[in-house]
Image (cartoon, rainbow, N blue to C red; front, side):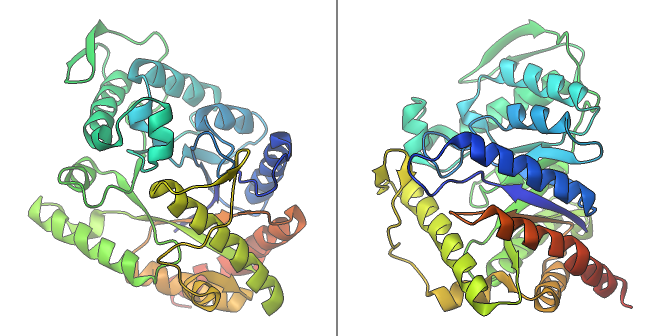
Length: 349
């Protein structure tokens, strides 16, 4: 199991300075490295305070220069919104500048609010995203390549800047209902990157079962298909503190739904806290999340590892308007208390 942090760089306070979010991010990443976490994933979103990271590669290049061992990945690059040849060069450059501490995280996106502002039809996200991925993989792996697609046509080209990892570890988020993408994930050895929000964990188990079926159909051993989970994790011995954290997580889930289904309301660029029509109770959110004392959190994580055969666990931290001191205290306890207990459970001791 590879533990890491997932960062949204979120703001819930209208008018707050984005530099505060970046400063908090750096402190969290440094602490994660100190406590033995291996990975950090950085989200990409645009035009609202749901996520103050429009360029994960820019953030990663900054963070890599201030860390030593942490491995980074976008979580994820929204492929249909990119010019693929620029993306390939920028990815290669950050891989070199980080000393090879860069993995690839990709997806096709889901927020029509963002797509309209990039003048890209959300209905074309799948086909556009796959073309960008084709080009990105060819550009990184091959000495020279060309491409003839519906949306992109590339004449014979070689990159002057080549990455250390010509075939990087690749996470693919979402798109589980797409006709082709899950099969490509299995065939190409990508790592499915999954998320259940406030839904019961059975949603992730069902996704694992779907990938197992696809693997058998594609002639791949299901046991060789990895899986990464993004999961809100907050360690606290106080029920009141845990309930407050769950409220911040509920805000994040509400904001994501408002953006997905295009009913978002804003104060400037800050998303208003509007209940979702499919919303569950705060008690259910706590039950379905990893919130509580170290022992209960570790037991839940170990159980989820077993049930979904997880290989990567991305702890979503610092959502909504959570105080930095609370986030840092929880991260420290994940490393000091939770990770050792999960490791012990996984070894059977």
